[in-house]
Every structure is written in C-alpha cells, then in structure tokens.
Length: 339
Image (cartoon, rainbow, N blue to C red; front, side, top):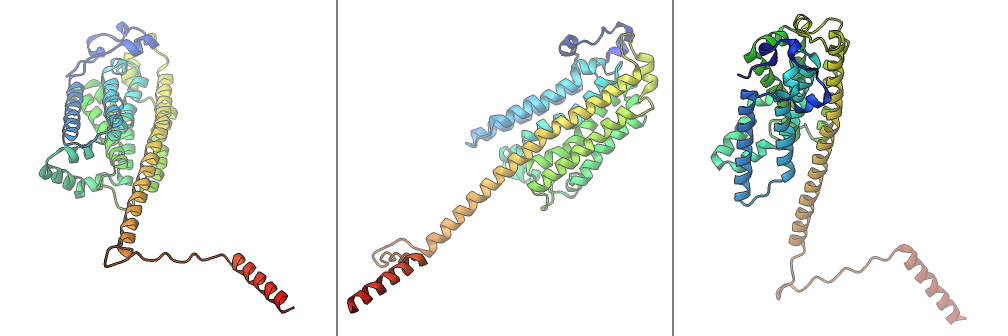
C-alpha cells in the first residue's frame, strides 16, 4: 500500500503547491499501478488478437482508453493531486471527479466490452454476452439506477464519515478510489458502448436525453460542496492544513467549484460521443435498408435470360401540361383543314 505524504511528513514540510509542482510532483501508488497495468495489458492483448483475426480496431479507441481512461486513473492516484489530497480539500475533490467521471469516459470510449467479445473464443465471448445481459448487470446499469448510484456515491463520500475515515486509513482510501471508479463505469460504459445490458427503449435519442439529465445530476455534488456551510472532513483539514494554504472554508469552495466545472466540461464530449454514435448508427441502418431494397428489387425484376427476354421498359408518363398542349395543337390543325 502506497504511503501518503501526511503520514510520512508533517503538513508544514510539504512545499507550497504551485503550478510547477502541480505538474512535476508524483508519488507511487502500488494498487493503482497494478490496476493500470492489468487493464492496459488485457486491452492490448485484445487489440492484438482482433487484428490478427483480420478485423480492424480503431486507433482512436486505443488512444481514448490509454490516454483518457488509464491516464486519468494515473493522474488521479499518483500525481500532485494524490500528494496533496491529505492537506488540501480541492485536490481530493478533483481526484474524485476524475475517478467517477473522466476515467470512466475514457474507458468507455475504448469500448472494452465489444473488444472482449471480438477477441475471445466463441465460448468465452458467449459467457461475456450472457453476463452483460444478466439480471444483476441489467439492474445496476439501468439508466436511472446507475445515475442514482453515482449521485449517492458522491454524496456518501462527502457527507458521511466515509471520506474523513479514508484519509486516516490507507486501505479504505484505495477502496474509495475503486468505489468511485466502479460507480462511474456503471453509468458511462453501457451508455457509450451499445451493450445489451441497456433496455431496448434506450435508443440514441434517449441516451442523449439521459446525458443531459446526468449533466444536471453531476452538478449537484459540486454545488452542494461549494455552498455547504459545514466543513467536510473539517477536523482533519483544520489539523493538517499547511501554513501556506488558503482558509479551509475557501479551500472547500475551490474544491466544489472544481467539481462543478469539470463535470460540466466533460458533459460536452460525452454528448458529442453519443451524437457521433447516433449518426453512425443511422448511416449503418440506411445502408442496410438500401441493400435490402436492392435485393428485393432483384427478385421482382429478374435478370434477362434466353427463356426470359428483357422486360420492355414502361412508357414514360408524360406530365399533363405536355399532353394538354398537344391536344390543343391537334384541334387547331383539324379546324384549319376543315376551313
């Protein structure tokens, strides 16, 4: 279990958190590193196997999974956010929003479940499909249930002894990381990966609406934290606040504002991803319809053979104004001939 700076150094020994230290300060978190390596290795093996089978796998998905998904996990657990989360509230708040929103978004854009189905042998792929369509998974990923779980997780973290206890107990802190990540994935991954766990009525327009609703829900914890009059984990932060830190109440307001800002910024690419999938699904549906109509037309009008000569072309139907004009001209010529 990785140690935290506060347990090894007094708060006063941590240097002031500047923009330079925010980008250059890192620490090793062994459980998080093992999770990153395991997820990356499994995803990489899946991509290699799919490509060996002759099927393409988009590089953009690999980049999203590695940079946004695994990269977000690394930043949340091993960057300066993790170094300073025991002495300042706002780094801990940014950590948590990265884990339950940004990292799940990157993992979902990598489409790991479809990759598993395409890479695994038929028997194992069938088990994955059955697991995704199982009753428990369908319940946990039901849109309103998963949204409520994300909101309940964030409120439980901040407004129960959970968060302050996690600051004191290392293994619980790591479990909180995993809890936030799992809650975020329950909502984000099914919505972005077209899996069978979602109900049939959850079409792309419905998903876009759910994303709009989720954007509102994600704003709630940030607003509540920012405006809450009571300090969150106040006893801990009042005791461990370094001399150079802002007022603890102001620190909490910064954390709530950061949560709100990140949640609303991430909502835009999330919505764009759903709209892109919607457009792609519409193109695929249109192409399938065109192929079906072409096949039906080929059956109705068979190709000419020796026994079946070509079907004569139908006479073109002339518009009324042309036929009317010809009739008038013919009547005028007959009248002139009679005269």
